[in-house]
Image (cartoon, rainbow, N blue to C red; front, side, top):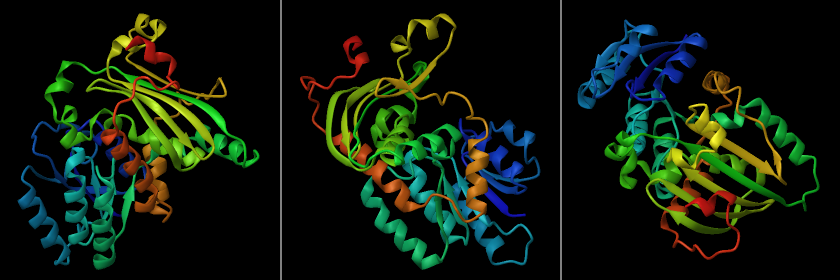
Length: 315
C-alpha cells in the first residue's frame, strides 16, 4: 500500500482521484486545499490530515519524510488550479514523493526544462493523467489507424461543447494567465488525443478565439483537423438541449463518428493502475499538447481561412 497526499480536494476532478487511489488499494494520509468545504473527504479518507495553508502542508510532508512514520508520503496527487501545477509538482518532489498531476501538466512549454532538472535532482518521477489514451475505444482506434498505410491522411472534425454557468467567468478558469484559456482548460486532453493518434503538428490556423469559444484548423502528420471548442451551451445541438444535456463531444474521421461517449467512469483508476505498474505517462507525453495549446493562445486569428468547422457558422 502506498501513501498519498492530495492537493485540491474541493475541485471538480478530485473525487475521481480519491476513487482511483482507493480502488488501487492505496490511502490518502494528507490533504491540502485553501477551501475548508471539503466534505467529499468523508466519503473516502476521513482520517487524513487536512491543511489549508501550503506552508504548513509543506512542513508536514517534510517532517514525515525525515521521520520513521508509517505515513511517509509516496505520491502527491495534484488537482489544483492549472497555474499552480508547476509549483505543486516541485513541492511533491522536494518532499521525496512522486507527483501525479491532472491536465494540463503546465501552461507553457518552457516550464519543462525545470521539471526535468528537478526529476534528476530528486530521483522522483512526474506522472500525468491523460485518461483518454486509456479509453478502450481510443486504444482500438489507434490500433486500427496504425494498420493503415503511413501515407494515409484523414479528415477529422473534433467538436467539444460543455456548457458552463456564469460562475465560470468569475473564477480562475476564465483568466488565461491562470487557466491557459478555453483551449487549454477544456481542449488540452483532445489536443493531446489528436497528436497521439495522428502525429505532430505541421500547420495551425485559428479562426476564432474568445473567452467562450475557439475554433481552428490543424494539419498533423496524418490528419487534417477542423476543431471547435465552447463553454456556451447555446452551441449545443438541439437534441442535446431538449434533453437538458450540457455536454456534446464528437470526433468524425472521414465523416464516420468515433463513439467514445461511454466508459469514462473508470479511466482515472486505469491511469493510476498504469502508474503503479511503472507505465504512467511522463513529461515527454505532455510536451506536444502543451506546446500546441501555447501556439493556439499566441496565434493571430484568421477568420477568412477556408477550412472552417461546420459549427463555425453559428459564431
